Length: 190
Image (tube, rainbow, N blue to C red):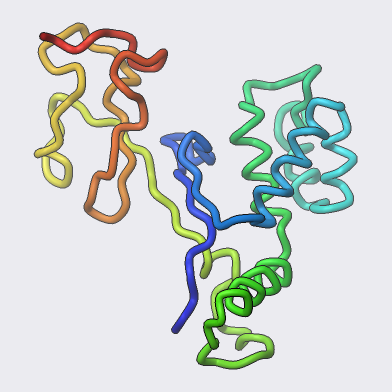
């Protein structure tokens, strides 16, 4: 199958998008929608926008404590991760297919399967054209899968956020907080 990846991000340890690492091809419909959602968040009209684009998101938000977050009631939701997640959920399969079709057309690449809809049993376009890494906390007693990955704060005062890594399958790609940053605030030893 010739499907390509056009969007990638990380699911954090709480199962939410961690938009600090996001990659996408140019003019991606999820990023365009995420920016629109962010503007609506700050304008106080996100609930109204989502009720038009993705009523199921509004319905599920209402069953949770407080409804859709806004500038006036952030409810602990980071605006970036929240609007990226709502944009991903609200982007229709047909938008993904149209976007990817244009990418293939603009690049001159011929799709093997030809034009037309995919079989109903196939995965949604949003899943075929996306890849996700996952965030996990390393610990002093880490055994097994990531036992060979060193702790960033080894031998120093333990700082919780320093030892989160982003991984896919059995491979760790990077720490999600950089030493010396706000999330891992200490200097490296000389």
